[in-house]
Image (tube, rainbow, N blue to C red; front, side, top):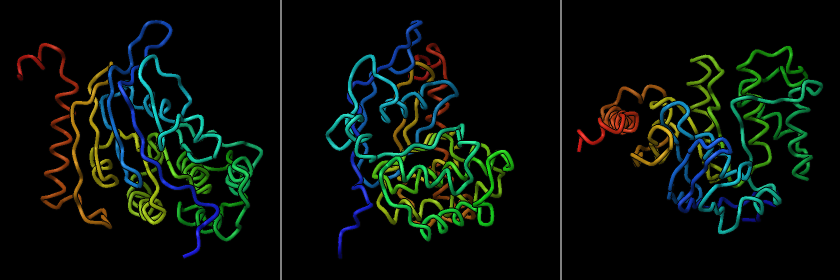
Length: 268
């Protein structure tokens, strides 16, 4: 099979003794050691404000660690950014207001110095449920529609590493379930290394191959759950006993991570 010139090979991700302290003295992460396999999907869950999104930004090279290091495919994040080898969808869609949905997606390709394939863009717009809205500007879209456009923008460059920060947070429940079924098929077909931050235990189990559970700030790993469920995973799967058992494992680790120091000592 001929090589795809627009595809970036999926990298592994290594966080080695990673810590982050902000200038005002707030410890967000402390001593995070983590290796994520190439081509797999990992979900980060933890209490609000624990540092999950900060960790994602450190991996993306948008923040500088206070200690430790991040490597993507054996190189620092800056090297991956130079090659347009990673893409990120934030909680805030941050679409350019003067560009249409199509224009925002095409801009991502232009910045990555990749050709615009109209058919591929059409397919991606349809996949995220925005068919017929390709020439509409962000101001005329709902919050959920803007978020879907941002997801399409992140995926159109076919990155080796895809970082998603609460990507479905602004969409309605029906759309959320549909995206949770449809999008993994796309990044799995491309063997994309995907890291997802979510507050939803069900979403973490539905989408990922592995769930990493973090404690309250400063974030430390308190759970590491392998999700060995077959794919595809339709929404109806959430009631299956094996799904419920895995979700319970994640929930119990999350509860441990949210406990205060005295509670953790008492549990030992």
